[in-house]
Length: 163
Image 1 (cartoon, helix red, strand yellow):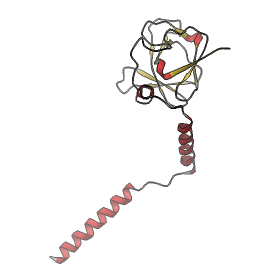
Image 2 (image 1 turned 180 degrees about the horizontal axis):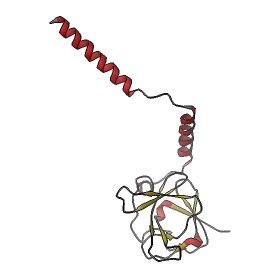
Image 3 (image 1 turned 120 degrees about the vertical axis):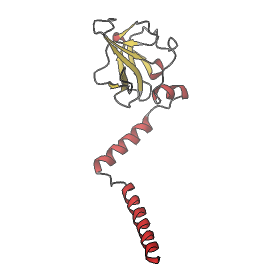
């Protein structure tokens, strides 16, 4: 009986130790350490966001249609990411789609990433620099010759007029 209990204790101890080892993190490679430092540094340099901005930019929400301060902006200039200030769109690519959000048929080269939504029906657009949620892109609607509509939350952007 004692040997059965001893064997059980040893087996439990062995399982406990192996489970701890299985959860142990692998040592970080130099490349992984550099990437982590870069991400931490980048996040520290990001602009402070309000709760409403975080709801859209970080938690991928949507501002109420027709309420964004950049919706009716017609001044020439550059639309930049609210989170990291990266240039996203030029005013020349903005057009009126009457959808309730600023619409652009082109982004600044390399500024915006397109990511399929989990539901598979839409394509999310995010800032290529900091991955801030901008909105969604739609194709084939016929609004412009480029047949593309980047539907962007005003709250995700700042605007800098041309000098």
